[in-house]
Image 1 (spheres, rainbow, N blue to C red):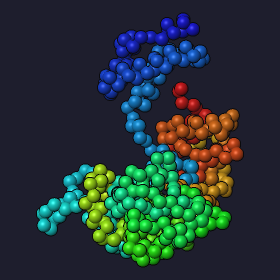
Image 2 (cartoon, rainbow, N blue to C red):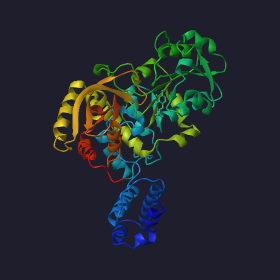
Image 3 (tube, protein in one colour):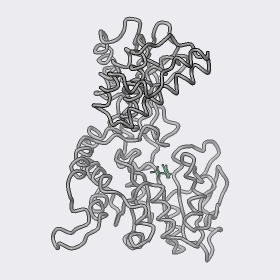
Image 4 (spheres, rainbow, N blue to C red):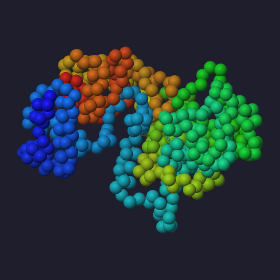
Length: 466
Ligand SMILES: *Cc1c(COP(=O)(O)O)cnc(C)c1O
């Protein structure tokens, strides 16, 4: 083993090789040095750990350095192929933006803009003004403001409306959204006192009523986005809460989570509240996400009464959670598509994927198989099978959307080995394994994923240099 270790050359020696000189033409010297060090360290480590590796000559070593150099010089944030079937996949970046939104972001990114200037008067304007009119037009709300994300929207609204006072919430609605965001914690951070009412499965109007005191500052309803309470249950509707609030002179806020702007029940997707029905209920403040079922960029949308929105606009916290201009550009372009419902479903990728029907998916599957045939190794077999996909993003957790899957099998490889190989390609592919089968869900595969997918499937016979 010691022998093997001593055969690994020193960094200085490698630097004198002509192939390394070629790397130095294309890459900065510190990066080349780093790639050499990382490669040699790994070889030493492997030799210490007794990993068997065929003797690598000069060419083999240079190839390893080259792969490491590619890794170091490419971005850490890369595009991937989502074959998971989870449309709003938080770990894969939630919603893909419509083409018009991508173009508008690129345009605004490369130009100065009227972000905070009123072009008619030449005086200072507000970034929030660019979205308010459109949001009010689409939802019927009186006023609107947009911040960094929905967690920030909830924090701002609670802090602005009820800091130092009690906020009444049902025990069935003390939601946790992915680890860090928990309603009771956000409540504390915003300086409010949580007043839980009811039981986990049942809360009645009288529970809210009897919890109300001179200290009550707000009634809060939280949409239980990512779970469902089923069986012997009762919850108080937003309309009933609004009636109680106005009777007692206490404002009512609703955090509806996903922010659906269209009724999708026509497409078999129901159970998720629409923004408009909450606005119609008369709730004083409504908050939702921009990048869940709305299909826009990461943002938190706050809609409601003019007097309250104006107060939030002057809140010191706003500056810390303000929306940036690229998000603003992307969100405005996305919202504009909602002026025509058919256009929204056709052009907003999240809506398009969610509304794909099994017959569309079967056709898509047949077309993909036809086009992949001849581009993949003979030892790899692709077949279509039925299954189900998920909305994701913590929305409609009980809903299974019927879908069509590509089952990938490869001679001599387990489903785990296929998963590993496809994940390590130039464009990583993320599928899922079900009953020892590797599956790719056609619902979330994009048209331009086909060439890199074909390339990745090649890896199933020629493993990348490790
Ligand atoms: C998703 C969600 C949030 C958090 O929204 P982000 O935009 O991810 O910050 C808050 N409340 C509810 C009910 C949600 O579903």
